[in-house]
Amino acid sequence: MDRIIIKGGQPLLGTIPVSGAKNSALKLQAAALLTADELVLGNMPSLADTRFFCDLLATLGNPDGGSVDWPAGTSVARFRFDRIGSTFASYDLVRKMRASFNVLGPLLAREGEARVSLPGGCAIGARPVDLHLKALEALGAEIALEDGYVIARAPRGLKGAEIIFPFVSVGATEHAMLASVLAEGETIIENAAREPEIIDLAECLTAMGARISGAGGTTIRITGVSRLHGAHFAVMPDRIEAGTYALAAAAAGGDVLLHGARAGHLSSLLQVLRQSGARTNIEADGVRIAREPGRPRPVDIETRPFPGFPTDLQAQFMGYVCTAEGASIIRETIFENRFMHVPELMRMGADIHIRGNEAVVRGVPLLRGAPVMATDLRASVSLVVAGLAAQGETLVNRVYHLDRGFERLEEKLTACGAKVARI
Ligand code: EPZ
Image (cartoon, rainbow, N blue to C red; front, side, top):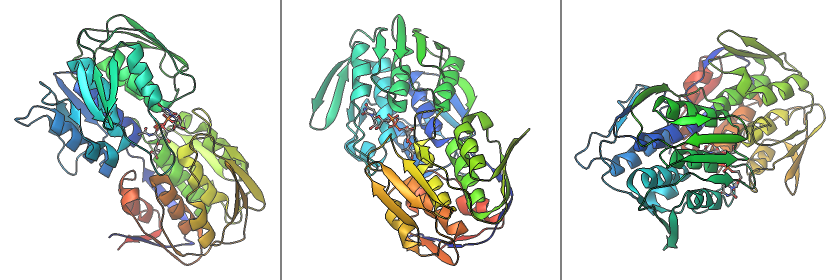
C-alpha cells in the first residue's frame, strides 16, 4: 500500500495550479444523466472519486457502451446518455462513495423510477439523507425503503413544488436542483445552501437549457423544462484544495501563488489567515499566501455553511495552529465526528483537548514528524500540512484517502520545494 513520506521544515516557494473541484465535478457528472445529448466537462480533476463516478455512470448508460469517455491524462470528460440502460445503483457502489446517491434524482426525473442504495454512515458522521428524500417526495415521488434501498417512482413525472429545508444541506440542495429541472412547473427551494458548488451546478444546468434563478442565495427558483440538451462546461476551481495549500504554505512558511484560486470562494479562510499573521494577496491569476518564519498567532474558528469557515478545511486549519503562540478554539458544527485527526496530530507533539464539538489547541513551539494515518480525506491531508511544518520525517499511511480528493499532491508540493515522496 502506498505511503507518503514528508521531510518537514522546508518553506514552500512557487506556484501551485488549482485543479477542478471534486465536490462540484461529482454533481455535474450526475447532471449528465439528465440529457440524451452529449455533456462535455472540462477542467475535470482526475481523482479516485471522479473516476469511480464514471464507472458507476457507465453501468447506468447504454448497455452497448460509449456513454462515458474520459481518456487517462486528460481533463476533458464526455458523457452521452442517449438512453438509460439501468436505473439501479447497488449498495457496493454507493457504499464506496456517498456521492453516488446523487444519481437517484436524475434517474427519477428522466425515467420516472430508480432503485438506489441508501449510503449508510460515514467516518465523519451519520450523514442521513432524509432531506434528499423529503425533497423528492415534495416533487411528487413515491418513495419506499426496502432492504437498504430507496425505491422511488414518479410514473406521471415530477411536479414543481416548494421545498423548505429545515437546515442547510449542500447535497440535498443539489439533489433537489437535479430532480426539479425536468419537473413540470415551478420549484422554489428555501433555505438553500449557498456554496460556490451550487452556483457551478446551476450554471452547468443552465447551459444545458434549465431555467434557474437565485443560486448562491437562500432561495432558488427553478422552472421545469421538458428536455435538456448537451453543453460544454468547465468545472470550477477546487476551493478546498486551494485552501489546503494556503494552509500548508502558512504552516511551513514561504510564498505560494495558488494559480486559478478564486478569492471570493476563500474569504473566510483568508480572513483567519491574516489574523494569524500570514499575508494574503489577490492577484489577477490567483491568490498569493506568504508567511515569514516564526509561530502563527492563535485564532478561533467555527465551521459554518458557506460563506462561513468550511468544515472541509477544519482539520487542515488545526494542523496549522498546532504551533501557534497561544490557544485556538476550533468548533465543528457541521459533522459530529470530525476530529479524528486529533490523536494523530497529538502523536506529532500537538497539545489538543476535545470538549464535545470543540477542540482547544494550545500551540507548541514545534511539531515532530511521526508515522500517522487518518480515516478520511481532509483528516489525512491535515497530517500532510502538519508534516510539512514539522521537524523530521512524517510517514502518512492510508494514502488512498488523499487520492480521493487531491490531484498530483506530491508533484504540486515538490514543485514548491517541499520534500514529499510516495513510497
Ligand atoms: C458536502 O457533503 C460535501 N461532499 C462534503 O465534503 C462537505 O463537508 C459538506 O458538503 C459540507 O460542506 C460533497 O459535496 C460530495 P451536507 P453533504 O448535506 O452534501 C446533515 C469532503 O471531504 N444532513 O451539507 O453530504 C449532515 O449529516 C466531503 O469532500 C442531514 O441530517 O453535506 C450534516 O450534518 C466530506 N440530512 C449536515 O446536514 C440530510 O438529508 C450538512 O451536510 C442531509 C444532510
